[in-house]
Length: 262
Image 1 (tube, rainbow, N blue to C red):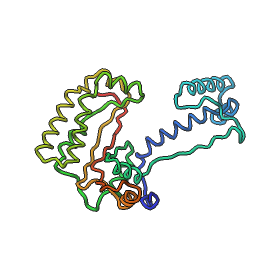
Image 2 (image 1 turned 45 degrees about the vertical axis):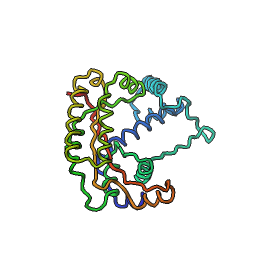
Image 3 (image 1 turned 90 degrees about the vertical axis):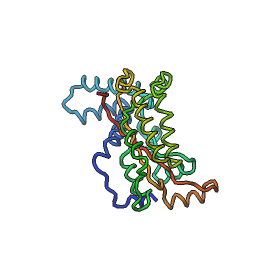
Image 4 (image 1 turned 90 degrees about the horizontal axis):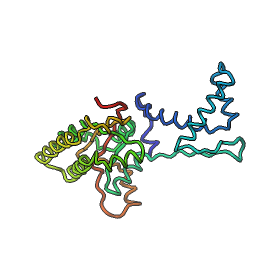
């Protein structure tokens, strides 16, 4: 399914930024796990102008960073078949995401622009427009700048301090408004609630939020008929629950802003 959908597909350079960062992170971690002599050899090849003392300093620095990295194995990768590693990279495709979301009555969210483009290219009926009734809700939600907490401890502290206690319920109201096809007056009231919620959360003056290294905005997409594909419907008929499944009603793109709030 994915191969047929991706034939002739070309992504813009801006779509590579986050993926490149992840790939560089994996490469750095893998290289730091090399045995000491192999890592020294790699450093010398890349920076032949360095003295042996400098090479040793870099080696110590890389190994120290590796030890502090919670995602890294501490064992060195030994040479030979006995110490080999088999790496598997797995990611869900759009069809898998639509299948699971439709089966469970969930929404879809992503932080990858390329996934967002694919969803709107291949999971909408031809000529399908956005639900104009909810335009005010989409606009208000897009004004939020939310701190992205990157560790479980930061998330725990944010929840305990109640920093987003006003935002979480109103996000549920947005999802419910989409699912129940809210009327124009209901949508207008929800937009006002979102605006008031933004004021109450006071993100722009929250010292804890200012200390976050990453912020995000929520871009909401609400097609009139939702998101679906025929091949996903076939999967649901074959492997589903036997109940009539509705299309996925909404999707969200998390757009990162790697800066502090002004």
